[in-house]
Length: 253
Image 1 (spheres, helix red, strand yellow):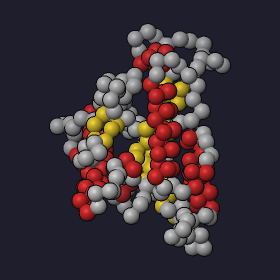
Image 2 (cartoon, rainbow, N blue to C red; image 1 turned 90 degrees about the vertical axis):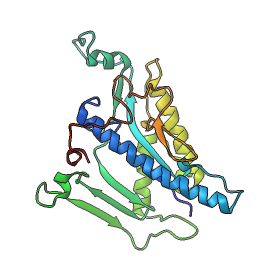
Image 3 (cartoon, rainbow, N blue to C red; image 1 turned 120 degrees about the vertical axis):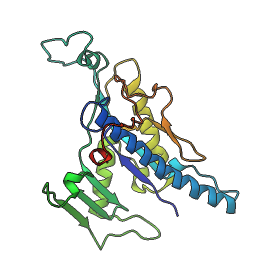
């Protein structure tokens, strides 16, 4: 059955990307991505065994993205330059900035939206610690059918999210499960990533970027994107993270 999942993550979790705790979180995150892609790759393999004409790859169904921005020095009002050799000086020179994704939101089939405050950690999910809240939106009179996705307010809200992050509003976005929509979103995200990492500083008005991984079409194995040196731009932090032997898993999973 045709489906598409678009998942937007922060480029790295809150904190220094090279720190042991963030690297541990990135390690488990990349393992989770690979587990998801592996299941899809296995299903594709089974389908191809029954139908030799069937052609598909895992990223036709599942994709991960992050948000980022660049801006030139035009209009800059800083009065003091950062010290040389510091991370601040690097960011001043490259003018790359991640846009941190803190929202916890799910939109399903343009019919249901869940927006909440809980993080996937012990503090939020324990039930006896942090107070959390979630809002659900569902319009029973605006549901998907065999011919079309739902066309209610949730559909409109999802389109606005697409427009806000891509800087575009296109008819292709109206049917997000279609392969054409997946390919168009991926093309926009790829172009934005290339602008984000290029040497020349530029203005960006579109912020959705491909998460810097690549996926093996045969088995779903996840590796760091080629050309990154396996690290995030302007850092020495590994994109796939690193397992820490010091931190217990209960703190980072």
